[in-house]
Length: 218
Image (tube, rainbow, N blue to C red; front, side):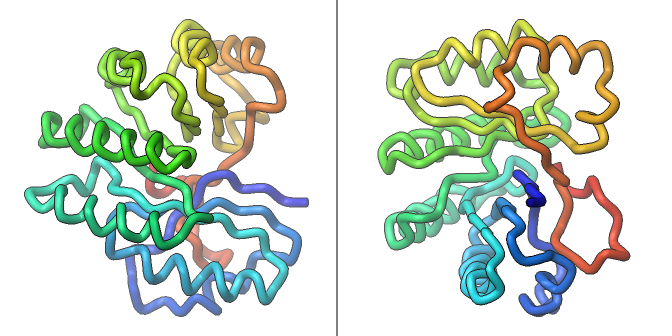
């Protein structure tokens, strides 16, 4: 059975759901995250069609740090309502990225969505680039310590992984398949530390016909 623990929708809204699922075989387990509120309807439609084709497609609603703009609070309100209406959906993709602008707004958006995940008892998929100190500081707050987390395309070292594993809430990690097959020394140290049942492969790619290349969004 093929497993892909982190994928995205393509940026183009013109690609029909049928086309997106065409190259995914029945029995596949795949987890697809939103990047902004506008993805919610498309994800719901995709999940309905996936069920008809025996594809285990799970979805998450969230505001990705790349898309945190002036309207982020109104987007999070839309996401909140969608999560309340859809108890099967998780939270994500959320996080912090110091390579992008509006870092203070990112912190606020991340904290709001993390609180939402805790309140609704949902797992949150987290994106982190060069912001591990800030991520750990936020996660160490009492109100966030029990929230279940999925760190996608985890880039931290073994010391950071150890701190995350010590939290009260469940923590899992996913990595690009090619990196799992040929890990760097840094990644191998992480893999040696993290229990095997908490490690998953991912594509981090937009769903698309097979001609599209992997490693897109992050």
